[in-house]
Image (cartoon, rainbow over the protein chains, first blue to last red):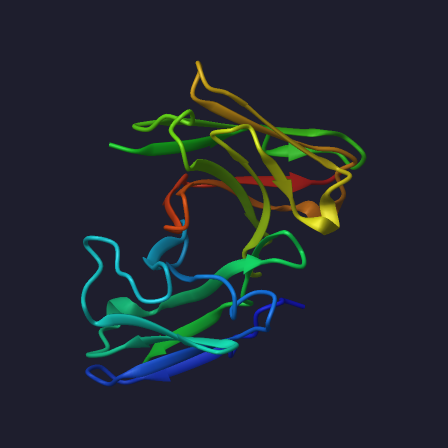
Length: 110
Length: 119
């Protein structure tokens, strides 16, 4: 049972906009930055968004992050087949004193 | 160029102690704000943060495994070592090390190493 709750799956067709939610609480999302990771099949996770809404260099502008209250979201616009992957949110939890990950969302591009 | 690579046994027996080494290059763990994390992922399951060590030698562990984990660093060798005692089949997972700097997320990851716990 993850501290951060994500929908197990999401889907969209090429060109569409998809959002993935990440729900937490006052000890984690509310008071700390949220990061997002993309994990392509058989590979290590890749940092997609840091500090809620910042993109590392090389990450396309199609990916964007936001945070409000106890939730965060990852939006992918102009969906492409290569976006098919697992997506994880992560943040610090002050009560646990450690990093926590969401359960992951498997994105399917139909 | 920043790289990290995990190494260790692919197979351990139940009750044994696992020792994993993260060898890295392209950054120094003595730089203020720098940290190395260990994260694992059981087959088909989600990521789980295990531990981290910082430039100041500050160590943090996930609460559920705190009694079984020890993290250490050798700055001169550019290595971070994680030991996990009393291994169990449920600890079967791919173990990753990842660099993080301040609150900028884990921006570089190793390829991961699969550890299977079986007799």
